[in-house]
Image 1 (cartoon, rainbow over the protein chains, first blue to last red):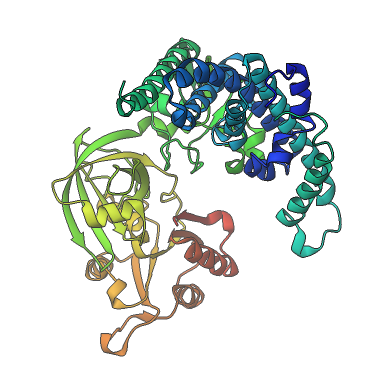
Image 2: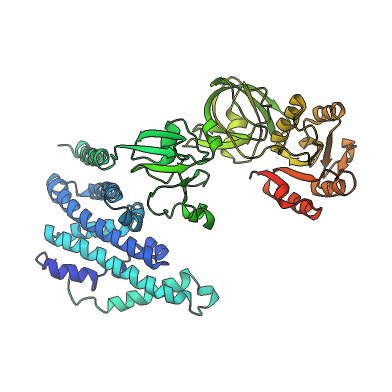
Length: 197
Length: 373
């Protein structure tokens, strides 16, 4: 454990070298289903980033001021899920009121995010790794941006594979899974450069 | 403290706290104040509280836009043309809108959230749509899978409609069905008998509304009806009507024929009515309609069975209804006044009949139908 890792380092590490999607394979379902379309990918990725940053901060407070002092670590899953659901709900209402344009590009994905395992995964990581508040926020924002980066990359590649002479049996999900495998291998090349564990 | 008590307390406490925060945010953020709904260029004006969907808000003002799914955006029925700016079309709406409708800014009223004053256009006939409290007066088996239901209207006590129109019945949540749904049924009663509504309901295996009506509803039960809706009606021309129905598609025609007979409307119209069924088990109202044919010279009734069994001693026409129709249009139906088609039944039957009619020279624009799945 390296609890003293610099938040800035952690932020960049969680975008590139330990990308939550490509090194931990979290949030795969929406990653595969939404990445068909560049615009939707952008909106969903941004929504994940926003929700992940906010939930990381709130969950840290809940974790270290409620759950840990009371010795209720076994309840963290259920409490975190409730926190995520509530944050998403509130965020949706606020965005709808504040900016219809933003709501249209980002807000409609918010309900999807409630069940995105990358969000819960990020919160559980910050618990396991005992990050402090700044580290948690940096890790949440970095992981979110990392998720956004991964889905944008995949969307860009898929726009190409759509028009490429892919063998019939591999069209759609097949070639997408292979692409994701290559992307993950490429990202593994970075692993170990910065130890975030 | 005992962890068995502490655990649930913490979970319930945090959930309650978050719920409180949500409802606080909801009351502040979702409060759009009073907005005005302008319908058909000032014909109707509603002042309402904003924040919810247009469909539900209109219903709370007693204006019922047809909707089969109850506002979940899954039926695409509640279309309304929006004249003011309400923001871009949502991805939840696009699958239900044609390019022409998108160009006209037609929207699904269940997906449009009221945030500011809005101007919309709705068919004028919706103004007469009401929600009726009704009581089931009689239920009668017409065939093994079609029931005739008669509702007595309690509040309001009478309905004004044209033969051919339909009502939606409001099916409450029951058994495994967790949400109220609405389903459309053509009225088979006459407009003259305005205190009652008669519907013909065929049991569709697995159908939410038909199962409810067939298995759960009893005489004396209360039910809510919303209506009347629909454009299917007798057109005011001297042209001969060629009507084709199957199964519960009988309903609008029964209403039309008895209404025309009773009031003597459209006196120049000759009427041919083709009713298709598989065996005598699927045939109903046979004696009533044959009686009507005897008493009313301009009405011709052609029941046909596609798969009669020898022991049924069927003396009427046999064959698929499309073949029977083709035969009659070619040989029997007088064409001097021209022909117009009226169809009610399954999409498959309607499409097949349209093909037969157009092949026999009836113009597509003179074929009217009420398609139900």
